[in-house]
Image 1 (cartoon, rainbow, N blue to C red):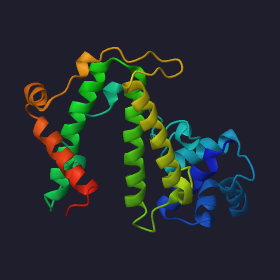
Image 2: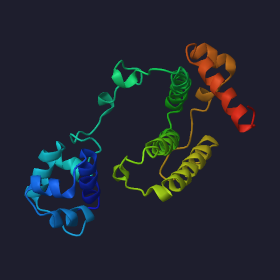
Image 3: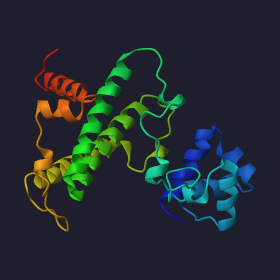
Length: 231
């Protein structure tokens, strides 16, 4: 089948909280055969793939690892909700700390990505975006690992090496971004030309980003206090 199918098949069963015996019975096969499918020892047929998709309420594309969305949907820019969209996912209760930190980070990212857009440089945008995505990926895995019942099958990279590999990939992205920012040209990419559009002062930040500048300046101050070891 493919490398993702056994992992996702096992993940769905464990997330549902059922044994191989129960799942095999519901799917009309032997437990031994299901075990072989989950271990990737044997490949299943199309009929079993469709039956499994219906059983777990997911798409065949999701089962095969072709889409990260359970419905098989491929996201477009229009499909992705805005960070501040009202909804239950965006409501935080209790401590004010996560709300405050989220605003500092989100507002700072608004400035960063506006500047990236002004740079009109695809390589710089891609490398900075990759770095940030990897940072979120790393800390999400840390939080995810806090509950031992959470299934590692959500991820393809083993937890023993995930952080190290992600850190290495982040270092590469940061180095590539720094190279582009200093005027170097990455393979197949145009050099940074809109340098004047990236002229930045505290005054210009306050002028062009009156709602967000204080968050970025606060984030910088907090980060440098952390770096310097201040309490």
